Length: 547
RNA sequence: GCGCGCGUAGCUCAGCUGGAUAGAGCGUCGGCCUCCGGAGCCGAAGGUCACAGGUUCGAAUCCUGUCGCGCGCGCCA
Image (cartoon, rainbow, N blue to C red; front, side):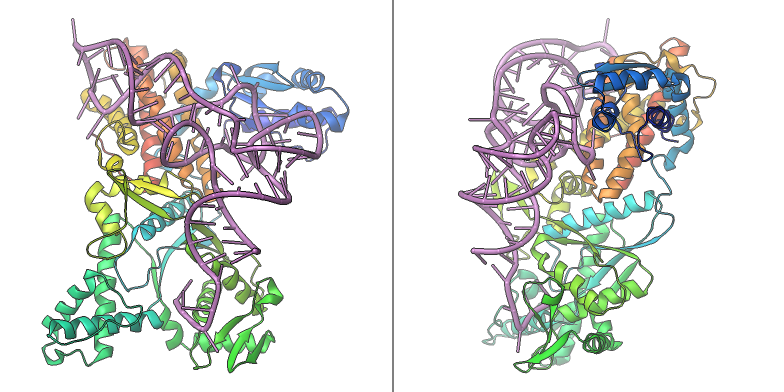
């Protein structure tokens, strides 16, 4: 139903009749300057060389062969070095708006994913402390990617992987144990590389309160179970406050319980890519492009983290996820090669690029013009909870999503918490609230607006045309953002579109205008409201009716 | 040293997978409140797209090199 399909088909037909290869795929884009028209194509320039003609001559020939009414355009002009600029027939806009309103909550959605299962793993924090800002960025990005994939027809499973089995968990347990003993008045040093955050002391105190028979924390296993359980609860609370829900929580420890780790080692050995050296078992990852071989089983008999990671991804594959996406901080990028290589070494028919990775760069938190590095509770890092408490869920989400993942992000707390025009998230929400306000003040049921029997050709202001174009671009934008796994495109689109909404709102009154004008503008207001709401929905940000 | 990412306005960043005169917000300067909410709108100034080559009709975008910043490079996760 894309409004460009007809035009593209006509262009293809015209190009073929001029001798273009069978696989021509005309590209249509919005000209930078709206004065050039509604759509432009570089088709003539692309074909000029192949057909041995001058671009402008070719453009003229293409236009001549175009059935303009069938293509849904009212004019086609040659410009510059050989662009063809089009103006669409006004009923194309009208039909687009009506279709938008009928689709309502489904507008922008598609069935491109054909209900294929996809696993999106994100956050995956160790249960050794509160979630930090990096986890926050992952949570926002992972959740938005999941929403984008759902909207484009994929069957999404949001998954959280708990590293609850490794050495760092023992580290946590002994850290808490030391704090318990300190609280009991004993000399007890934190272990090497132990956790220093204030939250460890809090955990120790609660352990004492709840375990009167073990006031010296001699039962290290009990301490471990207690600490992991409490920290998982705390992480769950933070994620809930952030509005993120997971479908599956996968425990690393279960891979040991189910013997999947050993099974994976066995299969790797069987596949013939392993060898023993210095008392350890190695995987020859260099055979698959890694820069050095990796240890699988240490000389002390335990496994490196890499083995359960591979075993874990085997379960994703075996659970039927032909597509898997991992959202991680760039500080983990070395695992990308290793996991993929490990899967390849199994010779199990898993594709080379499995799983997909979306890596995001580091986050810097600024307050008062200075970098914030310390959270009192967590010690060496700022927590997600700190940010949510200070600036609110919507602003935190937006700020984590407004930038491309692969550039570093500066989170300016002062801007995020300001309730003014400095703050882009309020700007977008305000645009939505304004559209809602029109219906509220006019006492009109927005859901009853259909656009049927309304003459939309009276929407003639340039601000109205620009707004309509933006609204009709939404499905393409969503498809592109989902395809590229780049939710920041949605954030930027919404900010841009909100600007067009404000502009129009300022320029054109809706209520108390002559009935034909008012009815047409109500349709536009309804369409804008739907697009803003659907876009915010994908980002996990609320769309308030009033602010 | 090697690998990955980044370098665009004073600051924070977009730039739709190679297109037309380089875009936004903030900041600076100057305007607009009988109004469906001013949490808004309009205008101005501000650029060697890090640098040097290359590819082609056409490069911020692709390739090579140099410089700078971040992250990673363990029988840690």
